[in-house]
Length: 207
Image (cartoon, rainbow, N blue to C red; front, top):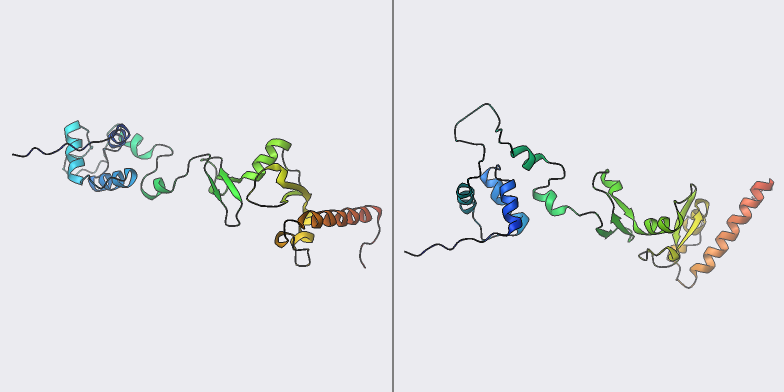
């Protein structure tokens, strides 16, 4: 008689199997294979392993109106930050980086905040780490490549300049060649400074 080969499991896999042993066998098998990319393990193999290890599932095959009360069930299935299935595959740990749809690098900084606040623009994080919080009424504008988050690549400018740089009647700053951007920025800064000066002195800036 040919002896069946024992299926190997890593320490991490065994820890997961023990922690999630109360799952229904179909879910138990599917989630294990997805999480650890195992196509060589059958549901029967996991069922036999669970039986061999003496892991209790909280089910005895008889109908009952009471839910399972296995002490490990709640900890395994409902503990904070526990993810299974698609959520586990999509999860990105804190410190992960990616590009926004507009091409700006951002970094994950938190798991507990609302999703839109879990990620922050890296150039903002770097700039504020060096210079402190961005003042109200101001914004950061890149001098060249927007994918470069180094603080030296970003200008702190009044938000009133943004329409003059890229608005409907602006100077197309974002579309301009890199060699022209410093000149455009200097001109718009001068225009904005003059407009503010005239406003503060009561001079009409129209016409």
